[in-house]
Length: 145
Image 1 (cartoon, rainbow, N blue to C red):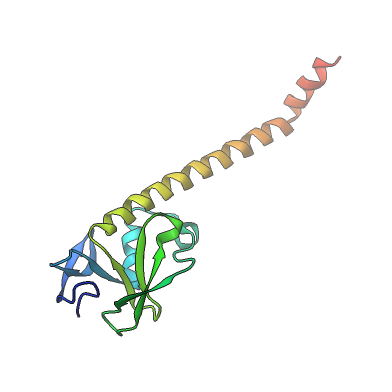
Image 2: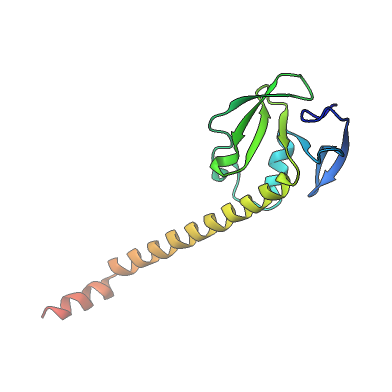
């Protein structure tokens, strides 16, 4: 396979426990579709639905998919300020140098936000349950006697 950015040969490598095809020249990498999911799952445990939309819209680039030579499309990764390219034939994703590390950072943030949201929802549910309890209502009634 050839690098879609500099046309150098891609070599198999492991980055963050995930197999990638790595470009020694520009330091970019090709991840197959399922390998991007594996990368995200290194730090995100809430499932695919909780991750949000991967690519909402995309624009064509001049780079070609290393597998099928179709033009890659540029998109903002999960609405973050991180641009990647994807093959519309679902072969994979091109990440520039160290963007895999950025994906991990964003997924860690997403997981922390999800945990905080779940904690807030749980606390709100307990508060509502307490407000509806007989002991609380009787205390409020006693205030107005």
